[in-house]
Image (cartoon, rainbow, N blue to C red; front, side):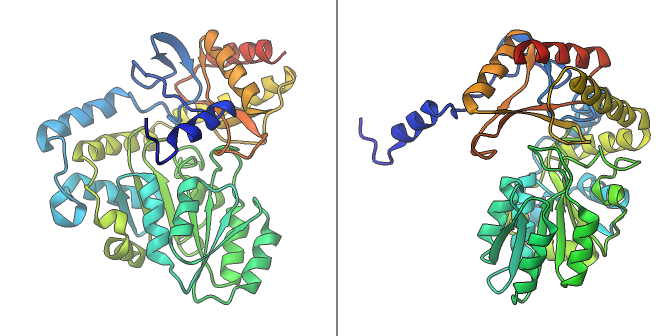
Length: 386
């Protein structure tokens, strides 16, 4: 068969390098216990950090709103798709993170593309951490701005680049919690550098929102950064909140700039109103059920303490992301498969998501887990790693 795009060769190469990815079939709702490919498993790879994806109040809000508003939103926000539920959610999210306004996006990837490209262009410069999420890196590349990657959490390397920059506008972009390592960006120090060099600062709080901060408001609360210090705050709704979509929060001027200039916002169908309603219900739980977040924090501490006693070397992380470094892709796959055989679902993360020879198990904890379930995982890890 003709293959002018050489697809077969590329796929075969990926298989031979142990980098081929396959989709597993989820046959149950998200939760600590799931059914995957017909097999019951304990789920330790979901981003549903607070266990809200299948919460009865969230499901009920979704169902009720679907009965009232239907399923599809019908159009983009700027045509006729911006419902009262969307508007209410934007207002409550802005209030929660202490910003003037929030703007909803249909996905986090689109939010990052939209924001960076709305804020900087060919006469400007964007500075990104080398371990930023792919959506942030793509956003910087597509913006046309001078794109520079600084060494991971290396303030001196970033400052050296800022000093040399002569571009019109400068934007520093980081993940607040790095999705494959679980560590935090030093946002307080980054805010100080941004002020010193008259640069904007943007943080993607996808993995911090709902988890970090006394009230779960995320990285801005954790580092106590106001809107002036951290002017562009993005977070997703599909992780800590257990729903779908994303938002960007900041000043009145930022919100209006995104509405006027962010192409992924302007030219995309709005989230279904029922998703906005579900997110409102989830946000209410996140605000009021403090014990849920406290339970997650206790599980994180328990997991790390027990892992150390068992001789398991974890990467430094205070978040729900607890990576276990393996090394080669082949080894990581073998260990992931061995855990699956024991009833534990944990993905092997391999290049190009992470650097070569840094394949790992990305273990994620959730408030839906019990301490007993975490202990079972630890015992299984010790067995398969021995």
